[in-house]
Image 1 (cartoon, helix red, strand yellow):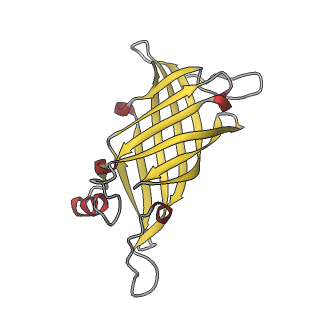
Image 2: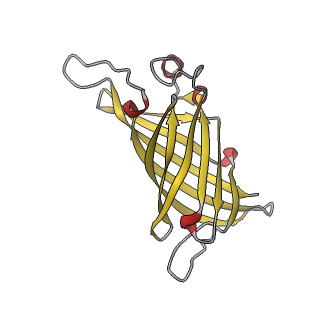
Length: 187
C-alpha cells in the first residue's frame, strides 16, 4: 500500500466514493467489567461510505451497524445486550453515524465530528480517523485503509443499566471505546 501525500504533507484518501469492505474490516468496542478487566465485542453487520473530496475537510462519512449483530463471545451477555436493558434491538435495530465536520489534524489523521444515533438517541461525537494507506489490490480495486478510534459515554444514549458492586464501583463501565479498522473500496 502507498500513501498519497500532498504538498502540505497531508495523507488523504483520493476523491471518490469508497464503500466499506466487510470481509476485510472490523467494527469493535471495549468496555470495563467490574472496573478491573476489559470486555471486547464486535458488530458483524454494518456498512459505511466515504464520499472523499479533493479537500478532505469537505468529505462526508455515513455508516450504520445492526444492534442485533453484537457478539462478545458470550451468548447470555449478548442476549442481555440485545434486550431492553441495553440496545433494545427489536425496537431500535440500527445504530447510525452521519458526519457533520471533518478537520485535518496532522499527516493522515482527522477529527470526524458527526451525529451518532443509538437506541433512538442522537448525540454529537468526535472520533479520530487515520488513513493508513491507499493502493491497488491484486484484482485491480483501489483500496484505502482507515483506523477509527474514539469513545462515548453509553449513558448519553440511554444505555443506563447498571449494577453497583458491594465493594464500590460499577459492574459495567460507562465509557465505551470504539475500534473500527476499515478497508474501503473505490466504487
